[in-house]
Image (cartoon, rainbow over all chains, first blue to last red; front, side, top):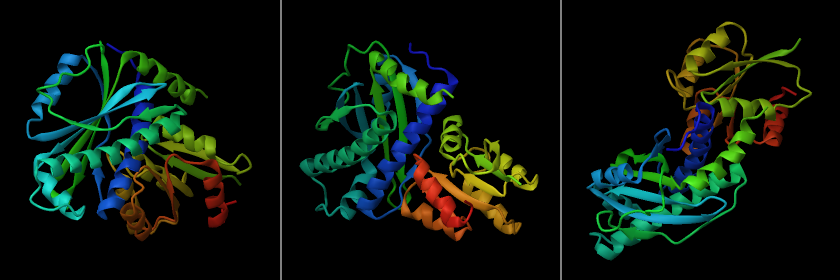
Length: 191
Length: 121
C-alpha cells in the first residue's frame, strides 16, 4: 500500500478541494443552480476493495475518463440514476430519457466535472496531463486495470438538493503516479 | 503598531499559502486558527483586526463565524478565502458582512490589490 503522511494528505485534500470547487462552479454555471460538495476523502486501496466499492453503487450510472502525462490515472464518475431526469430537464434534454440520451447526459457531466477538476489540480501542482474521451461503462462487465497493484482514491460527492442529484467523482492513481504527484506536494510543504 | 491578523483555515497548506502571499512590506503580527472556534477566540483576544477566513472548516464553519461576528457587532475586517467559488457563496458572505471574497488558489497579486482596495496597505 502507498504511504502518505498527514501533511501530504492534508495538502492533497486541500488541492482537491480547490479543484472540485472549480468543477462544482462549472456545473453550477451550466445548470444555474448551487452545487454542494463533500470534503474530499483520500484513501489507498487494493484493486479488489476498489471493485467492491464500485459494485456497491448498484443504483448508479458510471463513466470513466483516463488521463495520461506526468501522472496517469482515471476519473470515474458515478451518478445516481434517480437524479438524472431532473438534471436532463435543466440541460434541455427530451424526457423521458432513452438509453442513448442517458449516456450522453452522463458523459457530458463527466466531461465537465473531470476537465475542471483535472485542470484544477494539475495547474496547482504544475503537472502536465491530457484527458482522454469519457466512456460510459457497466462496472460488473469491465474490471479495472490489473496493472494497478495499489490505488490512491480521491472521492468527492456532489449534491444538488432541489434535484435529488447525487454524483461522486473518484480519481484513481496508479502507484508510480502517486510518487510523481508527491514531488510537487512535498515542495509546497517546504518552508 | 503592527496590525493583528488571523488566518483561519483547517488546512496547514492553505494557511502556509496565505502566509506566503502576504505582502512583505505589511506591518502585521500573524496568528493562526484551525477552525471557526479558534477564529472567534482570536477575535475576542484582540488578535484579529483582519481575519482571513475559510468557509469550509470543522467544528464551526466560516458562515457561522460571520454570523457570530455580526451578532457581536465586531469591527473585524473579514476577507473570505474560499474554494467554494460559486456566485451563491460569494453573495451570501458579502450579505453576512465579509469585506471581500477571494478565490483559492490564492494569488499574491490579487491579495495585494484587495488589501489596497480595503485601505489596509
